[in-house]
Image 1 (cartoon, helix red, strand yellow):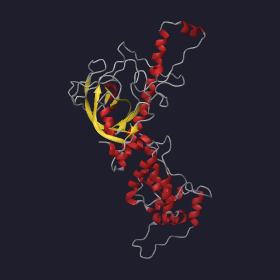
Image 2 (cartoon, helix red, strand yellow; image 1 turned 30 degrees about the vertical axis):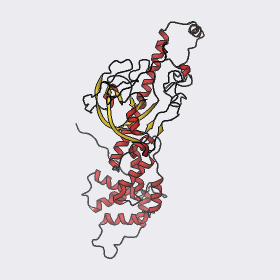
Image 3 (cartoon, one colour; image 1 turned 120 degrees about the vertical axis):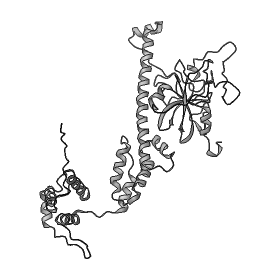
Image 4 (cartoon, rainbow, N blue to C red; image 1 turned 45 degrees about the vertical axis):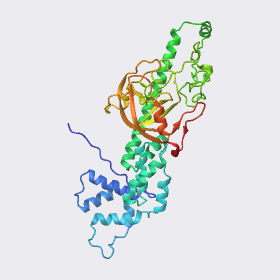
Length: 412
């Protein structure tokens, strides 16, 4: 079955007196591409000139007839044919003298706009570079402009962590980060919707207390509250929550206020779990935050880059391991082969955590990067262990509003 291919014909260059529809260089390039698309490279000069004349438009044809015949300058090696002579006549009339400094100024001021993809941004930079005479350095200038003025800070941090990448590599990395950001937003929205449905379903089937019965009779429902600070103005995934990095005075854990703390104290006081590392004399690593059944976060929430993938994470000052769940691994790293696990981690209740294995990759946080083992657990949330935080020179201090980043000369 044959397919019909539509050929884009250039617009009439000057259909009515006034300003042409586009710059001469761009229109001539579109016309020559049109000649190639209709297999007209073998056309005679007379036929090419006829096609050119027809697409000039009525006013353009009148201007062309008034132009003087082009004469080759002295020393020219070969005479021009009819088509080449016609192009030269029009070029002298419509070609604009290019101010290189103005062109480079426009190029330097062009920043990526919000909602503009990295490919669209690079395509626009290539158009602006036509007036800059960058020659063989054009890809280098475009690469630098992308790194300096890309809209996303996450993309910029990832690109700055690379050492002298090519424009092709910059494009691939930026596209991967953009895709991961879109995927993370979709996963976050899906997770939030599921949590809301779960809470509403539990409230629907829970036995009615006197307060709840009165509320139901009044026609209203008790709104959801943030389990970190107790506010009803936002949920716990809000990054502006005042309790996000606060230390609880009741259980000493980071991420919530004592007023909403659900920890239970025994008759002998608060239960504290010790942490052991596989490099020490203990038999197994103890992971405090993996698979919290009540859904509460045990540390501050942030985001890291594992390779080119951005993930939300829990920082755990009690775990030496950096872990991701097998669900996340299957979604983001389908083609990565896992190594056999070399640790035997245990959760808070001393029960074993089932491990699928580990893989090596780069871990980037706050502009700093280390290469480390990423362990894959069969269930639980993603978390970054204290060993990798120490390598990155990042400290999570109870009560601090933001993570503390040490100076490079303080990091071992």
